[in-house]
Image (cartoon, rainbow, N blue to C red):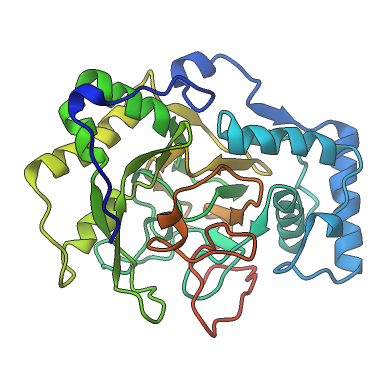
Length: 357
């Protein structure tokens, strides 16, 4: 169990750094949208063809397996901003009309390899995930929100970076929403320092039944934690709420529930959040340590072949921001490079399924 000293509400610091931004300031700007040039698009298409011809493994793919002579330098700059700056980027302009699903997967996986190592997203060992409506009941303790068309509250995922590629959009809805967790922290300190202090306490999260040997079915860590000059966030309200049903988990106090609700309330504000509608071929990358993300509910098309479908990557980044020790002890394990390793269960082979299951 992680136990940390909690400062009084009068001693809470603000973090005015590169991770703090407001959606109202960025909504009218386009410097976070990285449009691919015609030459860069051709480079990606050529890299896809080479990787498939060379039978490059989607699971183990590295940046050198997907060489991008021109775009690679640009991705290096984008990657630094993802990990140490604003924390998000949208790469747009890849023409996917003539690409098969396999080719789209290689394009997404290849671009992602320039940011980090793909890690498992669930107990099945998926390094290439799918965000799609599988018809599951979100009230089930083991169901993840991304498997349903339900609205998702603001949260973080269990990796340095989460990436999404739009294959098809919904009939309506399904808008992506992001917010700076550092800005949310700063606003909580300014408006409700009593609740901000609660965010520094440790909370119990369910592991959704994805438990390694020797682990409890839940983990216990802070929601927000100051570390080496920046604020690190791990926030999944649904996992905390569902964790309440597990034996050994202490009941949430009313002020803890208020603090959790306040995070989502702040992140949802018009001036704080940034909205983006995905187009086919869009690739969104977010740093989980500094970005909260959510999605509006959506209505899907009745025809299965037209339904909303996104590909997803979780990436571990050796050059990512410094993290507190509990991120790779209590929360997760660690990769060879010492980064959070996603949801990796012993004996489960890593795989890159091309269709949701």
